[in-house]
Length: 278
Image 1: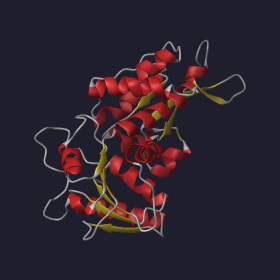
Image 2 (image 1 turned 90 degrees about the horizontal axis):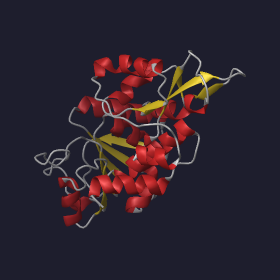
Image 3 (image 1 turned 90 degrees about the vertical axis):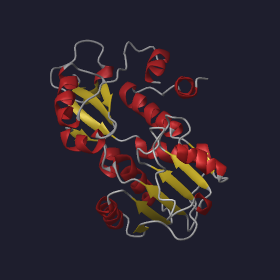
Image 4 (image 1 turned 135 degrees about the horizontal axis):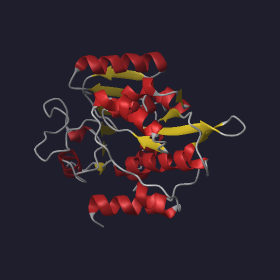
């Protein structure tokens, strides 16, 4: 996706993937800073860990409490911090790391585009998973007034901590830990269950049925159809995978690094070719 976008923008950059264990994250970020990388994307499990490793946090990272995009910056001749991509010649030696979060807005946009979902009074959402992605999703939905949020996580204490944070930051938001007894408008899977073919469903069928909802959104995009999405479609639910969220968070990251509008169509085609083989 990013390399297709970079080529379309005529940038002499290359996007590469690196496996970095959590205990090496700080060293990896410092290495990228020293090598004067343009920026980084972070995925599970680095988004929360990176918060304390940034020199500066954008309002998005502060609001959602997670970093998935880093932009390296240096001071220009006027003393203003500028993205490294804006320096045509030699980059100053003093470089800072600024953290952003592009996940939250990308989720909202994907839900609107992919399942035509709108927040309505009394809307109920069952959110599965309280990790980095689940936390951002919960906070974003709470900020938009998502009726009542039902939080389910393998470790109950983690879901309870997230519920407490939501109540503190968004006092008007109704939130409860556990499965809904009645119908909800949407189920969001923010767990990793579904990445492997042998994975169980990310919810307990004894406590919840897909007949209780009309929409299912799975943040997983590979495989393109998880067991959850297959079951959701069989139950007559409107369903979508996380490709749209991946697209929009990536497009925003590219704009943060380049200061140019992202070529959304190019990015989308590259993603669909990779995931669906189209």
